Length: 95
Image 1 (cartoon, rainbow, N blue to C red):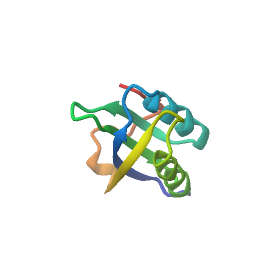
Image 2: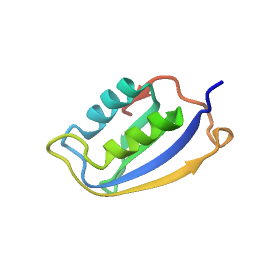
Image 3: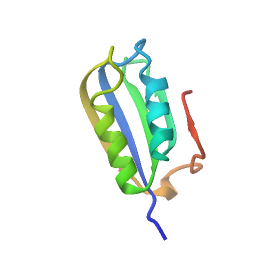
């Protein structure tokens, strides 16, 4: 049985208005991760990632690059226990 992990990431830099959320969703689907990417009022993007550890880490690594127009200056990663989530996400949203 594979282990599922959850991470909440806060991405700073030029990450709004550059297709960051849509690109993150596409990459997450490629990697088989669930979760969401959403804009925050302070200009950051919050990304919740749920999946197998190697896929979650691959997406975190990708968050540092993002789409071509993005300029990422920081990615803060917080480990979560699955029971800390209200619902374990299915699929990946950009809400």
